[in-house]
Length: 153
Image (cartoon, rainbow, N blue to C red; front, side, top):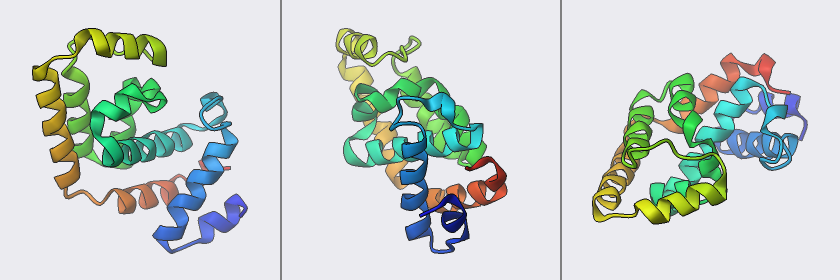
C-alpha cells in the first residue's frame, strides 16, 4: 500500500498498522532512523513503546532495542498530544536516576547493574498507569499523522 493510500484510510485499525509497516520499512526497521521526518519518528517511537509496554512492560521496553530511543520518548508522546503518557514515560526513565544509553548493549549492562526492587516497583507502577491511562493513543496518533501528513512519505 502506498503512503497516499494509507493516508486516505479512515479505519484506524487499518491505518496504524499499515503506516507502521511503511515507516518501519522506510527506516530499515530502525537501522536508519535518520531517514524519517520528525513526525514519522515520533509516530514510530510512540507506537513501538506502546507495543513493548503492552507486551512486557517498561522493563521489556528498556531492555529491547526499542529502548534505544528512550531519550526521545517523553517528547514524542508530547508531540502527539499524549501528555499523561509522556509523564508516565518520564517517571519510568527517572526511576534509574541516570541517563540511559542509546546503545542497546551498554543500556542492558547498566540495567543489570542498577536492578533493584525499588526500580522494579516504580516500573510496575508505570506499567499499571500506562495500561489504565484514559488517553486514546490510537486517536491521538491518527490525528497527529493527519495534521502532519505532508511530513509522511
